[in-house]
Length: 78
Image 1 (cartoon, rainbow, N blue to C red):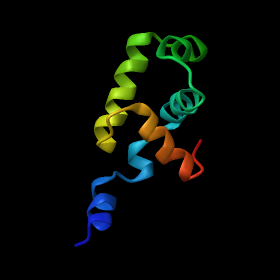
Image 2 (spheres, rainbow, N blue to C red; image 1 turned 30 degrees about the horizontal axis):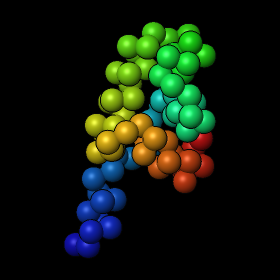
Image 3 (cartoon, rainbow, N blue to C red; image 1 turned 45 degrees about the horizontal axis):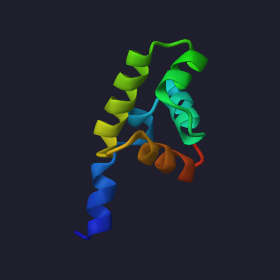
Image 4 (cartoon, rainbow, N blue to C red; image 1 turned 90 degrees about the vertical axis):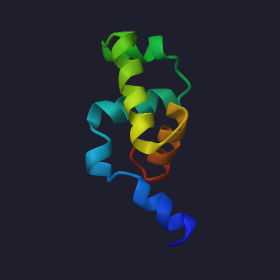
């Protein structure tokens, strides 16, 4: 198994990994908005946005939400 194959296998499927709310959060993160701004625009608490971005990072083995946003953008999801 190559490194790229292992990497693909470690990523969850899009259907399981990201729901519509996650994609809205990622779109705002990709635009460079801070967590507080994302929360205000989506009418969520900052804690909820932090929790959701952390969960996305955990699912994608990413260190920062922008890495997940880049992954989603490359696939035309945001």
